[in-house]
Each structure stands twice: as C-alpha cells, then as structure tokens.
Length: 232
Image 1: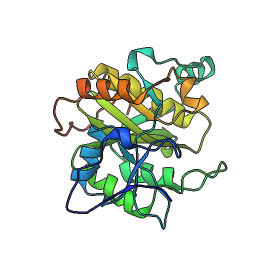
Image 2: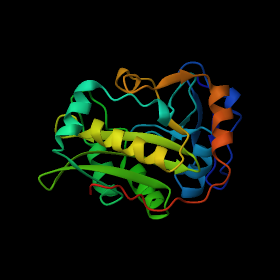
Image 3: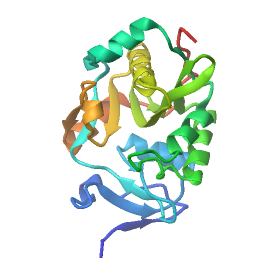
C-alpha cells in the first residue's frame, strides 16, 4: 500500500518534496481540493495535479523534471517552413475554455481523459483570475490547435495542447514560447519527458535543480495581465 499524505480541504500545505515516491515517480500526496489558492501554491512549490476521473486529486513532483529555457527553443525545420507559409493566425486568452476542453477530448494515443470536468472548472477559474493562459491557432476562422498553462512570475507551467490540423499545436507552442521570452519568462516547466518536447530543446534536470530555478523565478504570486500576441 502506498504511504501517502492525505490533504484536507482547509489546509493548502504539502509534505516536503523529498517525500515524493520513486515509484510511481513523483507521487507526493492525495486528496484536497482544486481551489485557486491550493493550485497556485502547489505550482509555486513545483507540484501539479494529475489524476483520472473517479480518483481523488493526486499531486506530483517528479524527478527528473523536463524544462525548456525559452532562449534555447529549437524550431524543427519542417515546422519553421509551416510558420513561414503563414497559413495560421494566432491569438491568446480569447478561447481558453475551448482550448482546455479540446485538450480533454480523447486522442488516438489514449491521452486527454485526465483533464476532468473538475479540472476544467478549476483552470477556467484560474484563467479568470489572470493566472492561466492559452494560445490559440486558427485556420480559416476555425480553432485548429492550441495549448494552455499557468504563469507565475517568470515561470510558466505548460499543461496540455491539442491539434485538429497538422502542426497546429506545435505552432501555438512556438508562438507562446516566443511571447513568454519577450515578456521576461525564464523557465518553462514541461513536467514529464516526451520526445516531442525534447525536439523543441527541452531538457531534464533533477528535482533539486528545478526547485532552485523555481524559487529564483517566482518572487511573488500576483496574477499576470492578459496575454496579447501579434498576428491575431
């Protein structure tokens, strides 16, 4: 049986990250709620929720952690060619709920179902408070891709992306990273390692290094302003 700390709704604190399990990698605690206060505090400590419908909230801090430094973004050649064609138009924070609901739809690889209705409601609330943001990709007036995440200070925590057209989510990601860099963002948390993100220049660091970076990037927990991206 897993020896996990059970969180209460009236206490947003978490156990020390050093108590996170090695198997499954990074599982730290269970329970609690998805209140804005808890979510903001969790992200500021390097913790994020990830669970399936029917489970209590599960809270994670894996090691290694996949990160992207904005200045190290690598744009694959084929994607750069797509961007130069100019077939897409981009916006930010104009269709947040549409983006997160699209990310929650079942996919061919089986991913997407972990974004429960409770999570959609919680992150939409964070968006209304100015902490959660989205980038949208449009083709002929239709939403064809995008991604969303949380921004705290100079750190951004990527959550999920979707595509209904080739390269639509990748293009949104590049536009989003370039926007973040222009606004002084220094750290993008990609959470779990995937080949897809490694191709963009993401790299693994251990939990301790990630924690140090996070402390340096988050000096305060105030909300950020609505994102504005050119070429809307």
